[in-house]
Image 1 (cartoon, rainbow, N blue to C red):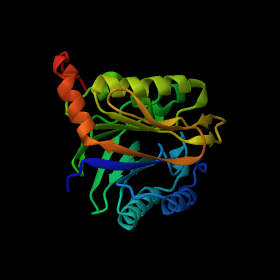
Image 2 (cartoon, rainbow, N blue to C red):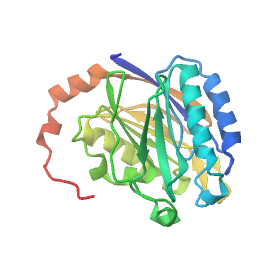
Image 3 (spheres, rainbow, N blue to C red):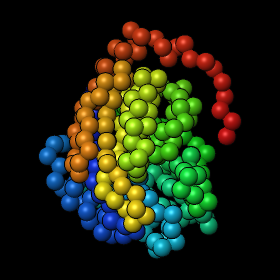
Image 4 (cartoon, rainbow, N blue to C red):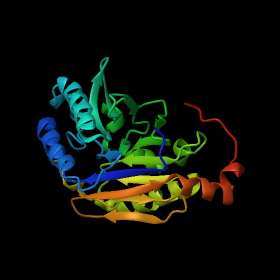
Length: 259
């Protein structure tokens, strides 16, 4: 069913290191505590483990356990739920994002840009494909953390309405996170959502949140640093009105991305 407004909840919280069950229980409580009806719930990157470079410490069955949890949580809440987890398949580990709808539809995206600074490229296999999800009349383009630094990968040639980044983005580089989220919204004339974690992980990295939503003119709609849930309503008319008035997307350079 198409809607003119999409209500989104951004769950910004700390994570329990390499403990999928404890994190699922933690997010179950967060979702149960939502104070507004929403259409989409966004969780951080690697929300079941933290940003681990040791996915072999996680039992392989945990990937399927989390998919089942996402399916049940989406059904119970009546909202789609998305976030990434370490996932093992066909002999490879992936930083894989799942977008799970209340009707049981499951879509996935494998992180394209693995974070070489942390050695993610040595552990996780990079994805090669975009994901565009058509959900309640909105076209959604989900991405993961380090993808944010690469504007060509996010370039709006697929007429999407919402760009979403889930992340474990540490405090020392948080200015880049803030700046690039806003830039991606402006250059793609789309809503841009960033959901980061907070707290500290076992690898010693500190995270200060800064989850936010920007509209297609780059105006910040919501923002927080602390452990919290943020709510935002995204308006389809804002996108169409702005694009009809400011036809910047029509002036894009044409080129093909080599994969």
